[in-house]
Length: 467
Image (cartoon, rainbow, N blue to C red; front, side, top):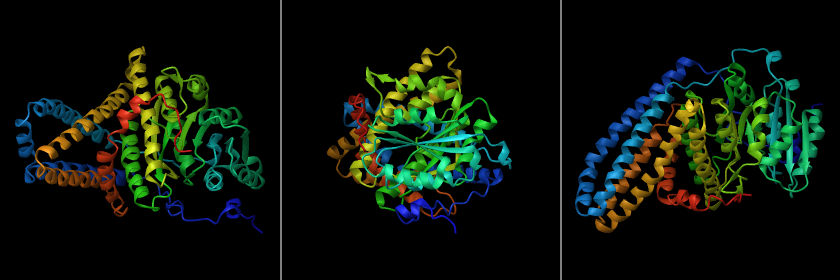
C-alpha cells in the first residue's frame, strides 16, 4: 500500500494555478525565435499605434496649448521631453537585447552527471503552505540521492513546527529541519541553512512557493555549463492568480517586470535580482560573500530586507555573471488585499533604492567595472522612470485644473497606452491574461506614484511590513 502524502493529511490538495498542468516539452529554438519576432512585431505595431492615437486625440496639439499658456509648464516640459527620449532609447535597448534571449536547455544529461544540490527553505509562520512547498521540492525530477532540502523554522509561533515534523516522518533523511527558537529574520535563517548544506550548488526558495517538477534541473544548467556564472534566477509566477482582480493584476505585473526584465538582463549576464522564491548560487561563491551580506548596513542601520537584491549585487561585484532561466518555474503566493500589496511593494522599493545606489557606488569604486557596466546603465535608466512619472502626474493634475476637458483625451490615451503595453506580452495559446496589465498599469500610474519618494524618505526603516 502506498504511503499517504503528508500534505493530504494537513489539507486537501487544491488546484495550484496550473502547476501540474504545465508540462516541460523542451524549448525549441526555432519556435522560441518565431515567438520573439512575433512579439517584436507587436512592439513595432505598438509604436505606430501610439503615434496614430496621439494624432487622433490631438494630444500633441493640446499639450502645445498647455505649454504655451504657462512659463512654468514650458520650463518643466523640457526635462519631461528629455526623460521621454531617454526612456524610449532604454526601451529600444532592452527590446533589442530581449530578442537574443533563450534559456539553457537540458540536452539529456544522465542522472549520474547531476551535482549535489542543497535547497534551503526559510519559514516563519507558514503552516498553511509549507507542506506543499516541501513536497514540490522533493517530488522534483532530480536524482533523489543528489538532492537535499533544509527547512529553517525561524521562530514560528503557529503550527509550522507540527507540519515540519509530519513531513520529516514521511521523507526521513531527505529533509533536514533547523529550529530557531526566536525569530531572527530571513538573512540569518538562510545563513544557518547554508551551514547545514552539503551541496556544491545552493538553491533558495520560499515556504509559500511551489517549484515546478523540472525547475531544479533547468535552474542549475547555466552554473554547470559556464564557470563565469555565479547565480541564476528562476521564473516567478503567481500561485493564487485566480483569487481576485488584484492577484490577476499582480500576475500580469510579474510577467512584465520579472519575465521580460530578467530575460534581457540575462543576455549580458547582469540580472539585477535573484528572487528569494527560486534562485541558485555556487556554494564556493556564497562562502566569500556571506559575511558582508549578513553584516550589511546602510546609513548605519542593519539591512533586514531586500536580501535577494543585496546578495545579487555582491555576486555581480565579485565579477560573476547572473543569468535567468525562463524554463525554471516557481509559483509563489502573493498578497490578496490592497493594503498588504502596497506594503510588499514599499518593502521592495526601499531595497531597490538602497541597492541601486550601492550598485552604482560599486561601479565607481571597482578597478575592473566593465563586467557590470550594462547592469549599471540599465539601473540608471530604471531610476529615470521615477522623476518622469512624478513630473507627468504633476502636469496631468495641472492640465486638469487648467483645461478640465483635456483630461478626457489624456485618460483615454493612457488607457490605450496600457492596452498597447499589455499587448506586447500577449502570446498565442495563453488566453487573455495580458488584459489584466491594463488596470495594473493605470493603478501603478495613479496610485503608486508616491512610493519611491516615500521609500527615499524612509529608506532606513527595516520593518518587514507583510508578516
